[in-house]
Length: 300
Length: 126
Image (cartoon, rainbow over all chains, first blue to last red; front, side, top):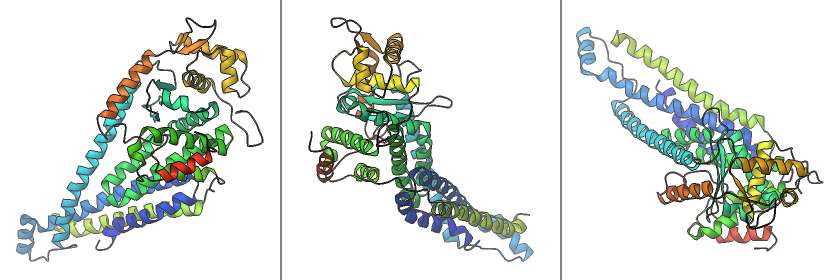
């Protein structure tokens, strides 16, 4: 209990530290999946650990203390009281972050569904007659495949082959349910802020994954890279405020990745990430057992 | 074009995907396009009949209109739904960072140095 209960915090920092490396070296589809899986388990384990720490306060509750004094039993104190109070505060903070993130995800989905109104339900592509060059996937609800929204400005800027790259890219997001994967890591990062770098990596990897799929569909990596460059330049011209040196270089990195061979599926590295996630679950399970053993006599 | 070539093999497209491509091609230009022109534009060894069928289906769904003043058999994209969507999108964008800005876009912003590099990649064209 004294050590185990802190494993999720340590391991989430470790996961955050290795995630960029995994993202660079492992095939994006595999890397995104294992990182998201590990992040979910770790986030749940972190929340549970805090709950355990907070639960140790039970042994300091007045009735429990009086009982123990009368019986002449020593009071168990697995963690200092200050730590337990800090855990309570952190739990509240996490809950607040979680609900804020969940609400923002919900609002995004709702705003997106509004954009589909007025279009026949069985078409994939929704065009917005807008001078702002934009393209994004609108995830469908259970059973429906989702839609692709592209503005007329973006379509007009691309060649036929480049448009095909764009459509294949967005289609890959829908087909592989990238929306869910992103929601999962966004919520995980909200619960455990140590996991924010993992969230950033997964969100980037999902784009890389869709790029690789588009390159496979079109059968031409160079053309895929050109489509990205043209779309980025078109979008960049419209938004000068974004062009002041403050970008995450995501598009440049995606284009660079398309100019080399696709990264291999390194199962060893992927398994390590999953093992990290599993370890947090094991540590927390162990701590739970310890706490139950400690508290059982005084609550009996 | 998008067919087979020395660079790798392209995958086959299904009916729904082709529909999106044809619609995208119509939106990408200001002119009305005939089936033959659409066929030439999107390439990939599509049969004329296939293109014609897709255009007909888009027309039945109300997504295209027949060119009124121009040539026979030429199609333009229908504007109504697309304008409504644009309006809704602009409204959502103006609302602030929450709904759409938080969304995964196909591409994100560039800094000047990246912009130069990308222009080089496209061979100096604008």
